[in-house]
Amino acid sequence: SLTVCGGIDARLFRISFSGELAYELAVPARYGDALARVLMEAGADLGVTPYGLEALNVMRIEKGHATANELNGQTSAHHLGLGRMLSKSKDYIGSVMAQRDALIRPDGLRLVGLKPINTADMLTAGAHFLELGAPATAAHDQGYMTSVAYSPVLASSIGLGFVKDGANRMGDVMRAADFMRGTDIEVEITSPHFVDPEGVRLHD
Image 1 (cartoon, rainbow, N blue to C red):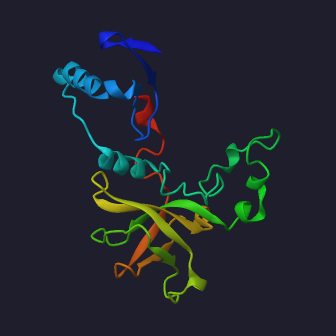
Image 2 (cartoon, rainbow, N blue to C red; image 1 turned 60 degrees about the vertical axis):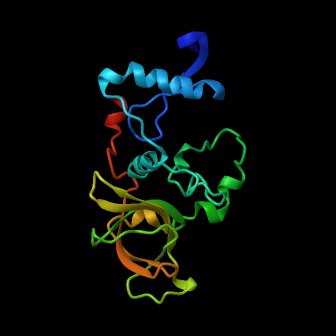
Image 3 (cartoon, rainbow, N blue to C red; image 1 turned 90 degrees about the horizontal axis):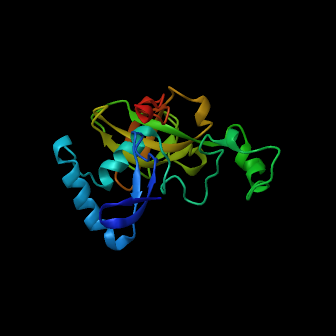
């Protein structure tokens, strides 16, 4: 807790949703506009600039941060590659369900990154993954794309998605078929951490 301009109580959090060194300053909603104006004025000589949710979403996809599209009520820590964080010795809410066979099977869905083989191709959220040459049927479905963005850092469309046995398929090439939009393109499975995988920026 701290006091900001005008004696307003606030809470400062060191939290990064974007993968950059970042802080969040929480004040009662009625002071939000005034706080934003004070911050813009205080940072004017440093070149401060606001950015919106779309830019934030691009950065979080570049960093491989899961959010609503990936946390849809059907995913677990195992799907997100975070199964090692689940205690085997302590009880916690959801501990029994977290060990269900379908969630921990080695070849289950895992969060991965996706890049188009042709960097001019644009990925689409909702596309389904198929092996090259496989029929486009539910029986051959290998997973689905959850989030996409154009990355100015990589000069390419990038995406996050869930692929069967995804953790062991880095570098594999698949098809991303989206029949609603009429696209069917080749993509490479990559780490979901496209930018700064070591997390250096968080500590600069």
